Length: 166
Image (cartoon, rainbow, N blue to C red):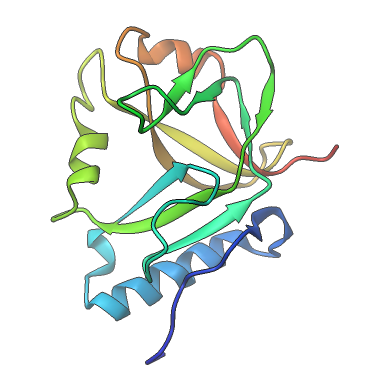
């Protein structure tokens, strides 16, 4: 484990036999590498075409689909946010996943800002294995515009899919 790194480029998440196990392994590798407690880790994603952090705390998955919304990369001061869409689903560019220390990473605080208020900075979005939505892999926080109530996103069934049968 001494030289372990979780960095991968464009790994197809839907092609993993057990994606939850992959997430657990990357979480454990990051905790070990940085000597952080597992409980202190928080999964952050950047829908950025895989151009995000290339450190030893991140990895890139491709082939994800966003259902119930679109992604506006220019929203939120260029950090991106969910956007209303008439399309049922949108294929995403490669997505950077990063394990952050929730006690010291400012992005975590930003994502959780106003979590219990009527206009939170982000909402929790489930990631399912496929379009049937029977296997929940994990959930992540995605930024939302503050002028749209969180209930709208939940009513639209916003979720991420690792694999979508074409």
